[in-house]
Length: 459
Image (cartoon, rainbow, N blue to C red; front, side):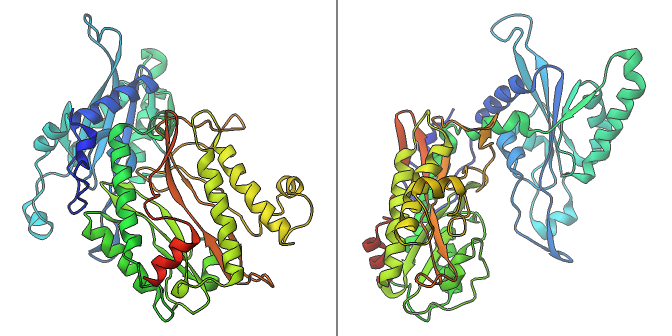
C-alpha cells in the first residue's frame, strides 16, 4: 500500500491530491464485514446530480459512506457489500470477507458530448477492486439475488426513495417464502450501525487528508491578511478565502463560509455575507477547505482595522482562554464532555465576573444559565463530513476519546443585545487530532492570541 505521508510529503498544496489506493478501501470493507456479521448485505446508493434549475447542475460531491467504503466518487452510482465466509484453508478460513458489487452509469456518447468522457464500467470495477460491476440499468435483475441471499440488509430508509422499492420487494419475498425455505432478509438496519464507529477513528490516510485540508484552510485565513478593514464587504473576505482553497488544489469550501461582522457574529450559522465591515466591530470568520473530500473547519475572530474595543478585547481573551483550556484537555481516555466542561468553566467564570449571570460558577454550570451567551457544544467530529459521523454519548455517558479521532474545539460568546458587550460575537476554533499520548492541534499555524489577530487584520 502507498505510504499515507507521501500524499503531502512536499507540502505543496497546489494540485488536487492523488486517489487513495484501492487496497485501503478493501481493508475498510474487511473491517466492515466483521461488524456486519454473516449473511448480511449493505446497499449504499451514491449521491445524485442535483439541479439548481432545469439543466443547470450544482457541483457534484460524492456520498461520504459510499466513498469511504469504495473510493467511488461518481454520480448516480451504487455499491452492494455482502459478507461471505472465508475459504476452507489458510488464514482466511472462517473469516468474514466482503464482496463488492458496483452499479455505475454506462457509457453514453450523447451524454459524454456534453459532460465529458465516462469511464467504462469494467474499467471502474478493475480500478476499485470490485468483484462484479454492472451498468445501472441492470440493477433490478442483479440486486434482487443478492438481497434474497441475505438475512440482514443494511440500508437507510427515507434517504434514497429511488432504491427503497427494491428493498421492500425483497422483504416481501422473504415474508412470502421464508417460512418454508428459511431464506431471505428479515430485518433492515441503518448502515451507520456498522459504519460510524469505523469512520470515527481515522486511519493514516484520512489523517493525512484532514491535515492537508486544515493546512489549506489556514492558507485561506492568511489570504485575509491586511484586508479586514472598515468598508470591506463580508462577501469580499469570503472570496479571498475560497479563492485560496481552489488555488491550493481544494475541492472548494467544505461548508457555507461564514463572514459575520458586528451583530451578524451573534447568528451562529450566518452565511448571507452581505454587509460591510464597520470600524470598532469584530468580524467572525468560520470557514473550511475541502481537499480530497476531507474537511477543515477553522474559526477566527478579528478586530476590524486591527483595533479591539476594550469590551471586545475582554470577550476575546475569555474565549481564547476557554479554547486553550479545552485543547489542553484533549487526550485519550477522557470524554468529549470533559473537553466541553473545560471550556465552559472558563466562560462561566467570565460571565460571573462580568455580572452577566448570577451565582457561583458551579451554580451557573448546573443551571445552564450560560446558554443565552454560549448555546452550542464545544466540539464536533471532523472528517469526510464537516460534522462527521459518530455518537457523542454511549449509554448516557460522554464518548471516550481514542487515538485517531479528530474533533473541533470551538468555544464562543455571543452578546446580541447586552448593554455592555452589545453586538459582540467571538468564536475561536481549532481542529485537533487525538494522539496516543495526547493531542495535536492541526490548525495552530494561524495563532489565536489577540495580538496575532489584530496584526493579521491590519496586515
